[in-house]
Structure formats: C-alpha cells, structure tokens
Length: 134
Image (cartoon, rainbow, N blue to C red; front, side, top):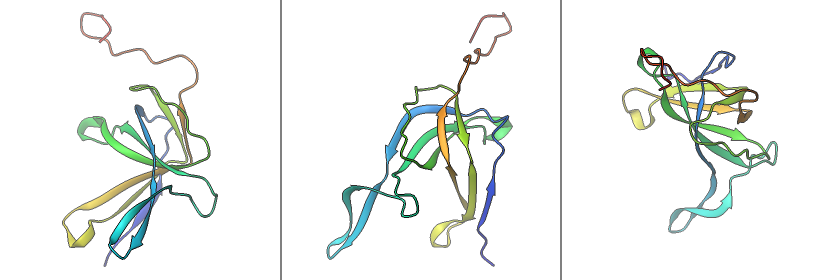
C-alpha cells in the first residue's frame, strides 16, 4: 500500500543554516510542443502569494551532520538571508512519500510558513581543542 506521510517539525532546538540562495518558482504550462516555463512566478491559489524555495542546511545527516534541503515557502515577504547565517523557520513540515516512477527509496520534501534571519546575538563559532574559534 502506498504511503504519503506529512508531519510538523519542532524547530525550537533545530540548528538551521541559510545558504543565501532563494528563488521564486516559475509556473509551467503544457503546450503543443511540450511542457514549458511560462516565465511567470508560481502563485499559490489559496493565498495569492508567490512560492519560493530557500536552500538551507538542516541536521538530517548521520550523527546530526548538516545536509542541503530546499524549503518551500509561500509568502509575500522575501527576506534576504546571508550565506551561512542561522535562520528560523515557522511552521516547518516534512513530507515523505515513495520515490516517483516506482523507484526505490523515498522522496522527502520540506515546507514552512515563514523563514527569517535569527534575531538577537549571533551564534559563536565552534571551538577547537586549543580554544580558538573554528
């Protein structure tokens, strides 16, 4: 039986790092010559807001290592996110479903209600054994 699971993620203790890259998704149209980009932004029908993808690093890898993921955000706001800076995600959800076209494995996607730079003091870098900032 196929499965499709969506679940909220508590981000209160989640270390999320922006890559600085965000892009508005484009609307695609079916034409007689195939599927093509319309050159227009993809707009969410329910809110009328553009759909954007922000690349962030989440600690989803082995031993909590950060891996790159695109977070889908529907919002009229498009914050500037500095590369390698901490960010906050409101209303983060994960969706897990079988791989397309009968492939092995699963597809994992993330969406959030909002993304923004972390307010307040910046985090301190990791410390090495010698006590110097890494």
